[in-house]
Every structure is written in C-alpha cells, then in structure tokens.
Length: 170
Image 1 (cartoon, rainbow, N blue to C red):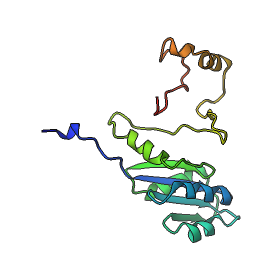
Image 2: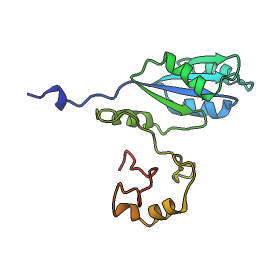
Image 3: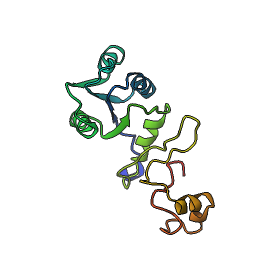
Image 4: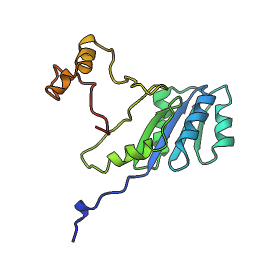
C-alpha cells in the first residue's frame, strides 16, 4: 500500500504570459515554439507593427489582451497574471524561443514540494550559456567558475558567487 506522499504528482498546468511591444516576428517565433499544450496569454502594449492582429489571426487559442497604450512590462505581466488559470505561471519574453520540452520540464520541477520558484537555463543561438542573473560580471566570479574553484567548497560565498547555481540537469 502506498501513501499519497509516495505517489508522484503530475506536473501542474502552466499559464505562459508573453508581453509584446513591436516584436511581431519574434513574437510569432516565440508562440510557434510554445505549442498548443499550455494556456498562452499575450499582452500587447499598443504595438504599431501588427503584433496583435497576427496573434488573433494565427494563434486563435492564445488569449490576447490588446492595450490601447504601452503600460510597461510589469503592468502588462500583471494583466496577464490577473486572468491566468494555471497552477504555475511562466513569464516569457517575446524574443525567447523555447525548446519543445522546456515548459513541461520546468513544471516537473514543482513536483518537489520544496520548490517555490524556477527558471530555465538561457542559451544563446550558438548554444553557449547566456549569463542572466548578475548585475555585473565580476572577474573573481568568472575566475572561480572557470577554474572550478567553486567546486572545492560548494555553496561557499567565496568560491561560489550567488549567481552560480546548478541547473535542473545538475
């Protein structure tokens, strides 16, 4: 007999919120990469490039909020959050392209009840890591990471700067 604690939870449904401002082509690529399996909410901040019309015409399953004025990135995300129905929410930039299983893999992380937030590994088009969590890249942090000093004492603030964290893959 197994208890509920022994039964793995299925990944919860994800709402993906994409804010757009004059990024029609990039937005199209972003939405195409997402696929139909998630709730997608696009908040268009008064784009003049036909972004909103493109979403209506080519992505009928996406929910579109078309603002009459540019409300800003934060306010637009809040608009999407107000109507999102997923147990999890992914805030995605319109110039981001996700691999086919990225959203599902992020959702799986939340099967662990100790996880309260997660973010994907960002890579450049050539596959190299895109540093994204530091305000500025410091020489000491790069040195510790490149020479593997941070592996000597994992979690040490001296050798493992705050922005160097393991990925979901380890």
